[in-house]
Image (cartoon, rainbow, N blue to C red; front, side, top):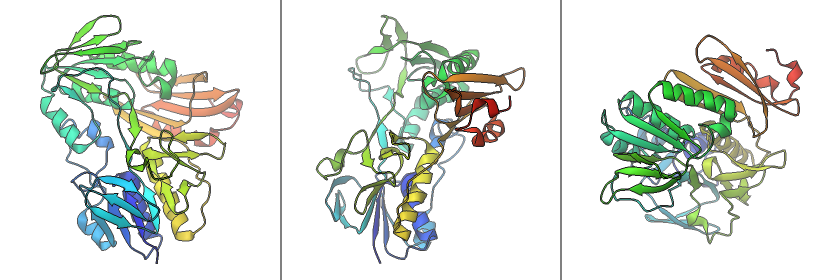
Length: 383
């Protein structure tokens, strides 16, 4: 019976281990986690978790893992990889099959920073530290208006924090929603009292021992007590530098998510070639879970198959649940249909007359009903 070592105890890693057991794998399954806690779900960290409304959502408890015969080691730092062994701060672990699920770490601003007041949000510890400083009336600058930055801004505003949202692009979440929907989202944030500043980069963070302000490219200084940097993430592949694996903004895998014989990758760290021949990496929650199930099935069956999955994401901001299905791109045509007199809407993206994506503001049902329209002519989609 082959042993499987899963490095990384986020959603991708835990789902891989659980699916191996569900599909009947009888060999040893070992799960290595970098953080000291039990594995937990990350999406609530920027929303209910940051607001202090919900304790951590555990992906699996110790009794559940033990009952499934999954051995969890927490607080483990991985150091290097050889063809049969992973070396860590807690010793070496051998394997027959290796699944790399080490995720990503926050990208940092390339400017000098004071020792106190600059935050990122990736871990439970990050969320705890940030929650402690988000006092009503305090001043927060969020740098980056992607999904994470917008969610942090919305949560902080709900706590009475004075929020400035700074984005170098032309609109919040433009890469996912396009310029038009991004501008609508900016209007929602402004209506909630957020100072949204798009088309502006950050050149400096002011302050000696603690943050006092953020200097923008136009010379404006925005006063701040705290700063959250949410400008994307970098795959955690530093420990793989001498492994012989191909690394290029992630672990490079084939269409079946295999990086080398008996080595696989899932989640944020995985860069795979799709059936369309395009190399891509996805940081969406649903992708990590879907890839985990695909890799587990390949290990159990011994028959790798091309991984195919429709991109799907969601984000909770104020009263809105924003959803996006598919793969929108710059230059897509967008047809927006209001669903009421307020903010609810659905949007259909098309490229050369073919539906590429569907998005919605508080319109999850309407979006999902159009799943079958992806890849079809726009003329076949009902208004």
